[in-house]
Image 1 (cartoon, rainbow, N blue to C red):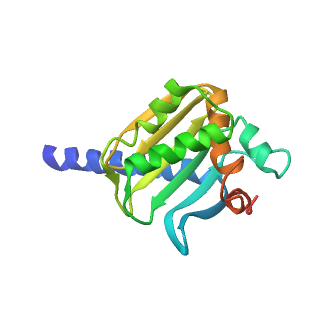
Image 2 (cartoon, rainbow, N blue to C red; image 1 turned 135 degrees about the horizontal axis):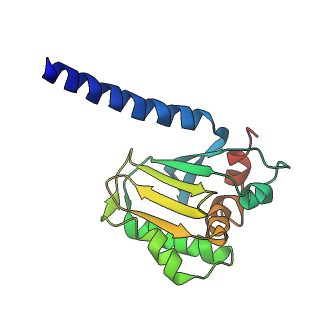
Length: 178
């Protein structure tokens, strides 16, 4: 009988853990989806699908308002192909530079989450901002994770998709459902 109770408690605990995560996700507002593509000559390849969610709507529907919003928010990628981690790291470093953010220590910490040789197709990458703690966390499935302090870093990270970008329609698509 004790074993049955133990299993019941474990199953109940797991259910409550996953259910609370689902309820937390339900509290977020899905703002949009897009697909990152890479073009080389006449060829275009889909790299990852991305979605954006945030706890509250910004005062106005604009990319800058989403960047500036000091609320819990999240990007979720699903890789659509295998990509070398070094290529993702370089692309992110270039995007930070394009948007005028140059704190190499924090950028290095962020891109360091891509710590395997490659990120495999169907892997997830999740980037979250915790407004209460003022931290941005990146988690790479089967890779690493990192948490970086500062609202300024969050704004720099969100600028990668909502700021200056070589695929401008991406930002528009990521806020299309606001």
